[in-house]
Image (cartoon, rainbow, N blue to C red; front, side, top):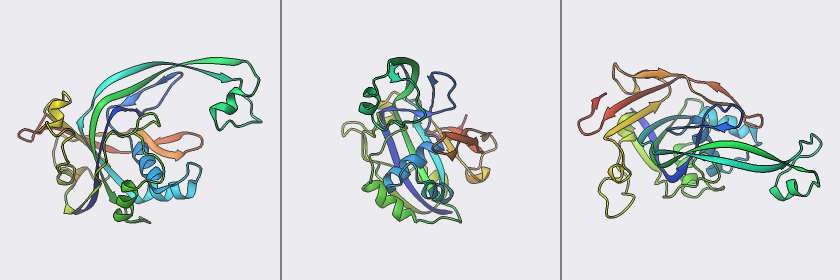
Amino acid sequence: MRDYLVFRLYGPLASWGEPAVGGDRPTSAYPSRSAVLGLLGAALGIKRDDETQLLSLQKSVCIGIKQCVPGSLLRDYHTAQVPSHDKKRIHRTRQSELKTGKKLQTVLSKRDYRCDGLWVVAVWLSPSATMSLNDLKKALLKPVYPLSLGRKSCPPALPLQPTLVANADLKSALDIDFPAITASNKSDALWLGATPYATYFWEGDVGEIDDERVLTTHPWDEPINRGRWQFKQRVMHQLTVKEANDVSV
């Protein structure tokens, strides 16, 4: 039993980045650890190049996720014009890129998104935490920088409703009720076209949710260096259950 900060993520578009090769930018069906850390960092006002504060946040929190609705997959055939690479100059705005006077090149890529996905995130503190859950709650209620669901172009469509849950187990914390997405719908999952199944993802002790059919995977979403976009593998556990009668599948 421990204390948790629990909040909801919903949006018409989300993109939870996975390892990318070439021009393809795939998305996972659920928020990656790096995406949740980025969202918390934006709320706290940590700048992207502040490696010290980013590392402190990374070491302070553990994360669990309930995938209520994975959403449908959308693939965007993306084109962009960029100037030739110049090591002597860093472009911080699109206007700066276009004013170089160099011939623009066309870059092609495919970018994947999740449409109408719904997730619940639970955060708990590690023994080396340098912040409190209440600090994180206040930041999510009044974020310093705009929040996004993986990409800047994917803002949350509803308030996150951050809630402190005391002395609970992980599954109970992730199963708390949030206000309905629409007043006329009693079941958001049904309205979004979901199945009656939910999947739980968590790090740390495999016994956080006790079930012999828990799967253990090793996603590449633990940040190493934000500036160089480097990540390493971590251990993650997952379990899919049928919510109607809580029978594992």
